[in-house]
Image (cartoon, rainbow, N blue to C red; front, side):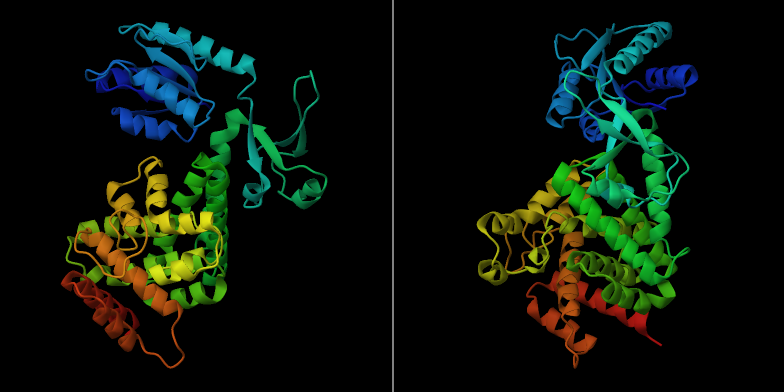
Amino acid sequence: MRKIFLYEANKDICNLIKNAIQNEFDDEVKNASTIDEAVKEISLGDYDLIIARDKVQGSNDSVHRFIDSISSNKINSKLIAIGNVESEDPVLIAQLPEKFKMTELIEVLKKAFQQIEDSGANDYFEVNFDVLRLLKRTNFDLFSRLRSPGKKDQYITKIAKDAEVKGLSELESKGVKSLFIEKKLRLQFTNDLVSQVARGMNIDFNDLQEAMESSESVYRLARKLLSIQGTNEISYRLINCLAEEMIGNLKKSESELGNYILSTIEHTTSYSFKHLNLISAFVFMSLPHLDIMEEKKNIYLENFVYAACFHDIILEKEGMAEIHTKKDWLECQFDDSDKNLIRDHAKLASELLEKFPGAKKEVIKIVKEHHGVPSGVGFTDRKVGSLTGASVFFDVIHDFVELFLNFPPDGSLDTMLKNLEESYQLSIYKDYVGILKMGIVDAFKA
């Protein structure tokens, strides 16, 4: 099954095109009606073919926006334009007139699919070993690639369909760095990957210890992929899966949140993962006491969990995420480039999140402001009142989790919360400490 993206503002025409493609080819079609949403959606390289109307709502340069995105993101998608477009870029493989018949579209698509197939550029999809290690079994053949000068690449089956995924270390020792699947099975691969990964993180199938360890491995891998490859389909799907399973596990653990927090601390090793998991747990505790409509509380929780997953995700080196103040930053032993990354990470993480399809403005803002600085650059010793309410609450929980992770043996939660409240000058910060305190008291009362 191929994946096709359609940019068309007219809903009736959009439905006609989608129905024609699905009836003729049984391919998946997704669409968007605004150019910004569309360009963001295709930026991960998830689509084999893009069909885009050039003139939409008075603008007549939409196709060039897609061409620029394909080039800048180095993706393999091909493009069919609706309307007359002047371009010699090879990604533009066909054009349709402003008004066309569905039979004309089908003929153009047949030629486009044949051209893509003949080019051989999109026949196989590369998957690195770190991703494959998340799988137990494979529903498709996995190939290694042999390259010879002047000859077409050859692909040899290394792990057969319906087999257990094992022997990767042996292949790695022989210099094999990744395996390949047929690109037409890419959608099936990502679906299988997410399904198997989700099961490993779900406490319906595992105890809390196993779920935490699996979740941490998925977080580490997503962070590594983003560091090496930037935004891409697999890292995007892994982070979505991680956030969804974390939300589900929190709801299932409502009556035993103490065990959930204990498992986070005892069975995970990454400071960043402990941090994001505890932020999510403490906002979940606080939900009943937030002054928002009941039906919006699930959205609020989802926003916080996604923000927690992203807020330190670009700080790959251990120790980076433990720097929260100007003093910490000035005294840390990282080199200049790493120090600059630490200083700017809130802004950079929000810009990374902004590239992900469906990213919400509220979540992007929380990530940008999570150190209490509106610009997302640096740290502040004095909180400001210009942040959104959600950003303030995230900042409060962020500060509390830092104290919690360094909880002294003779300390008490009451004292910790009192000290946190007294450290703030602004009433909005103090109010959110009060909400957090009520949530903690409710969660741990006998």
